[in-house]
Length: 248
Image (cartoon, rainbow, N blue to C red; front, top):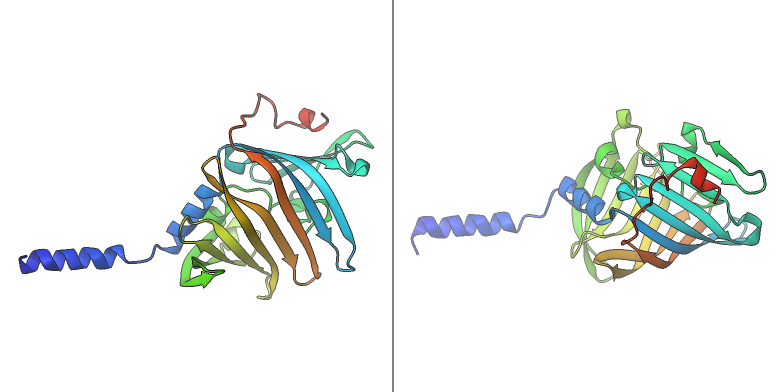
């Protein structure tokens, strides 16, 4: 083989072996975590700082790759029918409480508050392309986590974009770019919360975490979200994501 051809082949091999950039990884993470539509049922178990356990069950619908979501609680009986509508990736939030039979629009800062007293904020549940638009991503390293090769990526919030957290460290599987863990940091650099995604199953060609556990390291509380059933073949009827539909 001529020296020039050999050199070209060697250069191509070295370039092919280069890991992806942080941006490329986060683009893939966002893509794989953002199916066009979905319908699911699930359970939510909250362990408070005092050790008290609260368990809920709910239905959830999402469309436009998570831009629009509606969550309605089905158990326990005390909150059955309570619902939340989030539009524009949780920038606009409405709540409905069956006891008062009223729909109320929450203030814009509410997206940073805990949803139903859990360790997930409304913004955490909002989905969309927040990681791409509100953070600068940098690949920190390649690691092995629970026997799998993963990318470790640092996401630094872009101040003028109003990021939900100043910094996030994310681990994504190299095999499919699905995230398996996230550490959330506050303004003081403290790792305030951690999210672990596990029992990842292939559902209708989408890897899906059947269990997610968010732990609040400051409050010493945790919330476990379990997916009971899910489909990505659901399509929203016209007007589904509306204030009127919250009451159904």
